[in-house]
Image 1 (cartoon, rainbow, N blue to C red):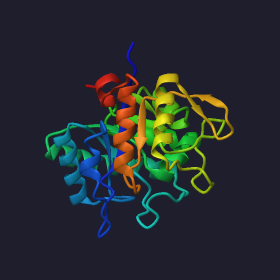
Image 2: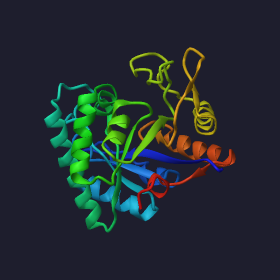
Image 3: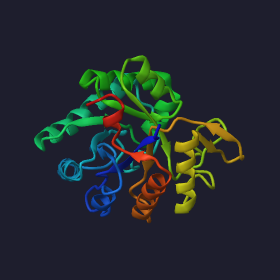
Length: 259
C-alpha cells in the first residue's frame, strides 16, 4: 500500500510591519495551512488574506491558535488555567471559521502554536481543556498534535480525529520529544538532512534521535516552518524527496476520515 502523508505549514504570521513574504510560494508545495488567529501573530486582514490564498491553492485551511503573547511570538510558556485555555481556543477558532465562511471554504483542522503546543503535549489537564474547546466549536476538526503526546491521546479519547505530527527541521530526543530550541543542534538547518529525516519518518516509521537510537514514531503530517531563511527551499526539496520515494502527499482531511 502506498504511503500517504500531509505537509503542513504555519502561515499568516505577519503582524504590523513584520511581514513574511514567502507564504504564497510555500503554498505550492504544502497540503495544509495552519493560519495564525491573532493571539501570537496575525490580524483580521492577514487572516482573510491567508484564507483566501489557501483556498486558491486548494490546500486545507486550519486554525493555528496560540497563547496571547504577540511580543514573544507565542513561544514563551504561560501559567494559563484550563478554563482560560478552553475559552481562548473557542475564541480563536471562531474568528478563523468566520473568515473561512466569508471566503466560501471550511476549516478542517486545528494545530496549537509554540508554547501552547508544547505545554499541551506534556500537561494532560491543559490538553483536555484544549480538546474541550475544539469539540464545543466543531467535533469534526482534526487535531494536529505531537506524535505520542497528551494532546494526541486526549483528542482520541474525546472522539476527535487526530493527526500525529512530526517535524522536518527539528532534532529528537530518545524519548520521542523534541530537543528544546535552547539547546545546540535543536534545529536542522541543512535541507538535505531534513529531507532525509522526513523520508525515514514516513517510509520506515522511525526517527534517529540525537544519541543515535532509532525511535518508533507515527507520521501523519509533517510540519514545515515558513519563517526560516530557506523556508521555500525546504518545502520544495522535502516535497520532491517524498514523491521520489513513492509517497503520496495529500491534505490530511482527504484521508483521515473527514470530508
